[in-house]
Length: 232
Image (cartoon, rainbow, N blue to C red):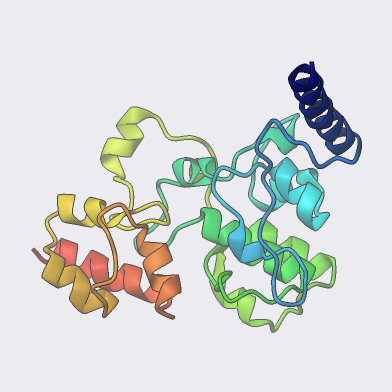
């Protein structure tokens, strides 16, 4: 009898704990997309991932999804559902050594919120993004960010067809490029180690993450790696 009451008591505690956690907002059955925080306690723009949507950024950084869509040239009735990782596919036909992707969103958010981030390094921003930052007083017309303004033609602001991708191949090194991708493009481990100046990485590691971990600028390393690939 005592054993039965003990079992009932344990079950009651578990059920009560789950109920209380749910009421307090501590019980989650789905993963949430919330960036890590900086040392000052603010959400870190540098922790924005490609799987985040404009809506996720709006929730964490209070930048309206509509403004993000304007900044990055995305025409949609539901901007909050747009995933950042799709930017690289949309802007696949950019000139060599330029890229608009997750890094661009990180940099834009850092400038818009004035939150310093060691991970949100300067990188290319489309003209509308720069214009919006100036119009809202987030940067001046002499800010360093203007050096990263990328003028886009109408043809680069829409998703490319398969034939267009064949004429304009994707950049050799992007924010989503892994060490294995570099090897697949003909680079040896020795080549990669000489550029990254470290042997502390795995084949599945992102090149951008290795750069961040070793204090290297991805934008500069990207060029060195692409030169090696193109000169094989």
